[in-house]
Structure formats: C-alpha cells, structure tokens
Image (cartoon, rainbow, N blue to C red):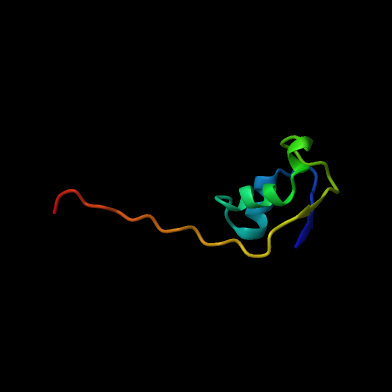
Length: 68
C-alpha cells in the first residue's frame, strides 16, 4: 500500500492513522522505506511511502505468577 505524506506528518502519525497502532508497525514501515530516515522526523508533504500490507500480530506475553 502506498500513502502520500501530509504536511507535518511523521511516520508514527501515518502508521497510527492507517493501522491504528505504532508498536512494531513503525519499524516495519521504516525497514520498507530506508530513505525516510534521511528526511528527518517530519516527512515532507507529498512524499510517497510504501507501507507493508500485513503486519504480524504482536506476540502475547506469558505472565508467570510467583505465588498462588
């Protein structure tokens, strides 16, 4: 999926708007767009960004109880 950056967008903002979360998604989007790191935190308006189609769900953490 391709998205065009709006004025004042950050990669986190775009990931939140598209996926509804940022954990794990922002990293995957940055890996798919190596050039974004060179642009700084605010992505210039009109920049075309490739976003991964499917983001694997976060693994559920196992909780260990020390005492019953």
